[in-house]
Length: 450
Image (cartoon, rainbow, N blue to C red; front, side):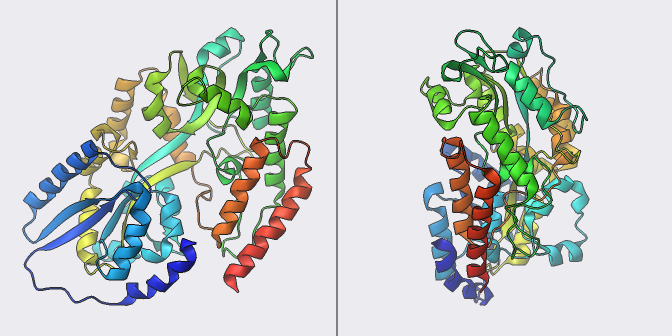
């Protein structure tokens, strides 16, 4: 497993590699770590590089495009050989956290240059830290929201879900009640009626099947990401986790307002790219990458709403982030810092993010909110953009993509959610089951730290 065999490479990050005498330093930016980059995107990155190079005499940049499937191996090999890139990005939170050993701490550069982090959404900064080190800076964000099929609500004579976060009456209990009325069988009965036949369901009220388990759990107001702040103690038997997974289990197998994985797969059999696109899901929870990638295919009226309020009264939308990081093994960290600050200027963010049709992220720079709103409204006039920006502002809980002390724990948790969605835990006592999962995960954490 890569977490084990990369340890031997880490010592290389502490060596100083002699630089050949030259008048111009070229900063290499690895692109493709965690994302696929096509030819058109590569061409536009090359144009951006030309713009930077024309403005600088002693500093140049090159975007090195690497195939997504081999990027990790390429990065590790480059570090081992001493030919490491200087910057990696855009990269997501999960990769940034999992490879936290490789990134330089930007804090000294931020402090020495007086670089203001107040230009970014606050929720975009904390997930890019590791043990008080700022190991990435945000290019863009992907806030999340509840996509809803307005036509299905109209047919059921139901009010649309609230667009304001933290609405007291918009809870997971309310979500359940509304979802029951929006879950329909082939005979026209809804899930709240005794005549409803779950085996003949043709429409479901709620779906969050594209999330990981920790992502789903984060909506419920957890004060941690499944592990203590020092990452030594697993917290998977937290009562909030038990409540959240029991709610999901009930929705899947007792009241049937959430489609199982088998039922979701039948929707994909129609050739549609997402369950929501079929028109058979009333509410689908996802991010703005889903908005830009899929929404133009929807052939029904739709909009976006706020995440339900958690039991503790908080609203906890999750967020994905694209970041740039400096390689600890780079010979040119100071120059790389100059390049990153240029890339994150509003003009370059506009080109790199969704308005420039390069990556699908919304710019993380607060000054670009109005331009972002205009862009979204031009593509999707009906969308309530206030929901999108309120989601960014409320995404302040511990991020569910944060690092766990043993990759086997990630595999364990993925397995739990897979079993839950695939009818393997339909009759399981969740509290007792998660006590077993907690014990196994703690054993894996102890193994890492010993």
